[in-house]
Image (cartoon, rainbow, N blue to C red; front, top):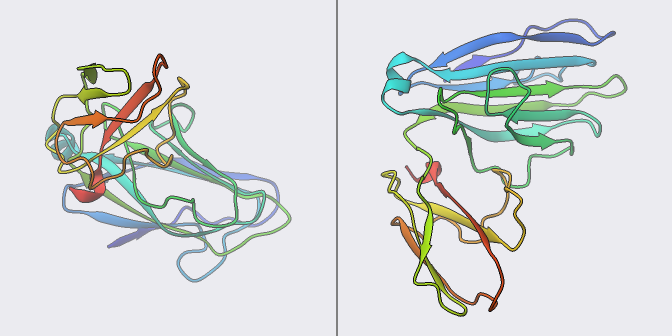
Amino acid sequence: NSVIAPIQSGNGAPTVCSGTTVLVGTTESYNFYDNGGPTDEYNLSQINQLTFKPDAAAIAGGYRIRIQFIYYTGAASDKIEVFDDSAGLANQLLNHTATTIPAQPYYLSSASANGELTIKFTSDTPTNAAGYNIKVDCVLCTKPINLAASSIGTTTATLNWDSTGASNYELYYSTTNTTPLSIAIPTVSFGSITTNTYGLTGLSASQTYYVWVRSYCGAN
């Protein structure tokens, strides 16, 4: 694995180290560390931002960037964010301010047309810590489309969507129309859905439900 660390600069006024894009091939993976690297603490008052993007061959083949938190230790008011774009402004997938690893450290993967993810880490002035190690690679894991419900009964419904070729899917449904974050705990986890259809049971009569489905990249 290759290691990438943002540019290190001294403590003091906030320093932005960003603007770099790393191209990732289909067989490559990186361990992305804070500016302290794998053995030291990160600097205070830093804004480190890096974008990972599939290379031309990978994006042509339908590959997308995937990340996994190997470890994360931050100070209480530090923040790590993940965006589904290159600017680090829109389509936020993660906004984590706790001192420990995000609660569900499976995978976050891009759904954007160019397959890229941006990781942004902001440290404050008072305290620093060990930082993070994030594994970055490319996966062939596309976004399910054409999700629809059929055979709707009083407390049941059948869901169908176009197959993405994934070996597993995850499903999330709610009575509230609020799109879940990628780290939200799915209602139906991987291993329970291996095809592009699923039957819901135990629903409440006359209740409106909202449903989201995603390919499970970790099993591909």
